[in-house]
Image 1 (cartoon, rainbow, N blue to C red):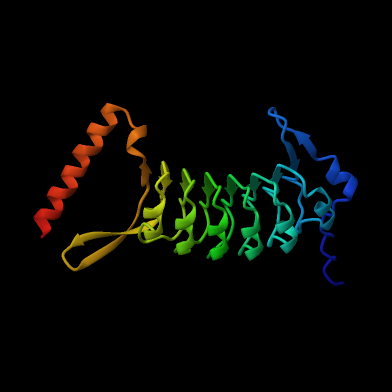
Image 2 (cartoon, rainbow, N blue to C red; image 1 turned 135 degrees about the vertical axis):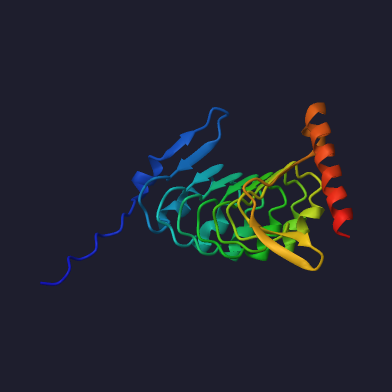
Length: 224
């Protein structure tokens, strides 16, 4: 006797999707489809394109449909903890976005269109398989928080130097290359690698950072 047929993927009706709409404390319309066990975004979701926030986190999604481009008014999109391997270029249409969470997926690269989201304040990309960021990330002039922990970065992406408003950068647990001896580099897993805007630090923390900086500079002089 052959194997039992695979359990049919969960689907949601328009009525079921509408029942998932609620209001945030500040009166924003939020469509919460998290933890629904869905493997694909229901097509009927398109009828609710006027949402302010969309939560599709903690599902079984492998791709985001192209019709996501119709949600031009959403300011928050949560896609964390799915099985996404890529993002559609149409994500560049969501130019009202202020927060985008893509943590805990299977992303190996990002579309350059991500750089069109010029209103983004928060971008979380931790727990993926990224080795680089598209240079267009440097166009995100409003970005304040960027999470890149638990990826495969060997160096700090150079495009981040253009982000003048960036206050917090998390690169924890990446195989960053460090200069160990002249002409030699060694990959180490950085358990803790965070960058914080100087203006956010207290005087005690500033002194500590200055001390650490001087130690690093002295070490560099020693090797050179």
